[in-house]
Image 1 (cartoon, rainbow, N blue to C red):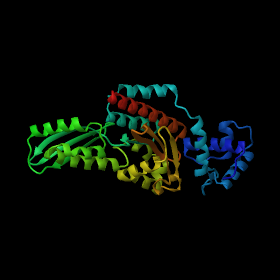
Image 2: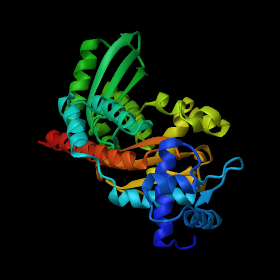
Image 3: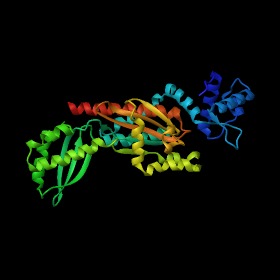
Length: 347
């Protein structure tokens, strides 16, 4: 893209600020009057025409004003990434909410989704922390009926999975509890490979349980992310882009297909590090579902142990100045909580 002069950059940023607030095309006279620019309307209009030719602005057919193009938003976001900060009072409010929450992963995820949606006025997306190397922590075996047994398996990092098993023959609850106690003693902290090697030191029932347990751990290891949490869909349904545009409503159908949204979150964060934040504008040419939207995404957690992803989805006209620092701050809070949780487990 052509290089911008300082004056063009200023006009572009001010125009986007106004458009984000009003959702209306912006005319040169409004910019001069609202921001008290020491420029004439004609000069601003000429610069806006140049910005349009360069691809940073668009001119709707029915309006004399301009609206931002994707490249214009990218310039604006680059500035927000460096300058946007969350007010101390808001930081204190959010940290207090987490301080009052129970030390429970599900409660943290639900609260994170609620806070992100409220602060950004967009749709929040949060995946629970997912262990990068699956390790066994604890198992419970509960007799249900006949040969069926409910297996509740907890992995290090707090991830919980439940599965109904069908054993070769009925087993009493007492025998199941004994097997669970022995397996908890033998397998704690072990990976799938280590558990496979230890199965020869167990009896027939325990070997059957281990076989099923290993299958479940492999399935968890192959999944792209932890459990998915979202909030705030009603925040954006009333926005002009989502109320009037068929393309934007199509993007909202993502929430009816959570597997698609989870996959998109996982792919978007694959190359980012914990603490890193990225903004996807219009799908960045790679996600057709987001061509009318923007996403602000960050990874959180303990590198090498357990990580998750969180973010906000909204119209391209979202408030980046509010959303970017909110996503960054909540990601930092969750990283601290996950690190503290893993540290306390290791003591």
